[in-house]
Image 1 (cartoon, one colour):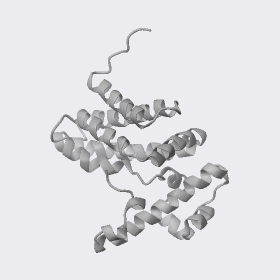
Image 2: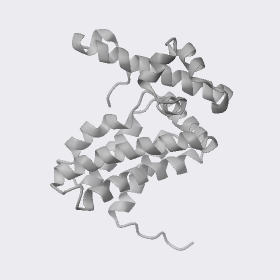
Image 3: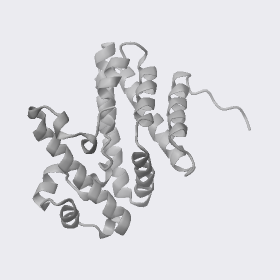
Length: 216
């Protein structure tokens, strides 16, 4: 997994990357402040000015990173799912695309810290409580789906504009993650292993053609 900005020391980054690291750290600080304030006060009672003050940046700096407080909240956590795109590009060279997605998604969730898992669970509650956050989260999933679609198209040689395969694979991957998160979030006692198992199971079901469960 790629380190989050909060876990990276400037001494570990080449000089040419320090500027980008500072941007990542500023972005992370703004998102963390937005998330914390939303948990404490509720989204409707949080302003961009207050988020900026807590993050020790100006409102103008805030606007350089985020278009809204909702976007800042949903971006909290220091873990961007797009971080596993390089791993997906590598995995898809060795195994079929759905199996590659199964591997990299499982690895992604397995390597999250306990704090990040707690934050995911809290975020799941927030997006249910505030529909505007759900809209932003859906847009982020949509962006990730487009990235996955591009990787699948590049690997298979399929045309994104005229062939369904890249669309179906990418859509299945995102649907699997969203379903796994939904089920996992409904059971507070479930931990990391359960989430990873759910993600793997969801993608295995797609690979198997979504067989119906046995009658109960």
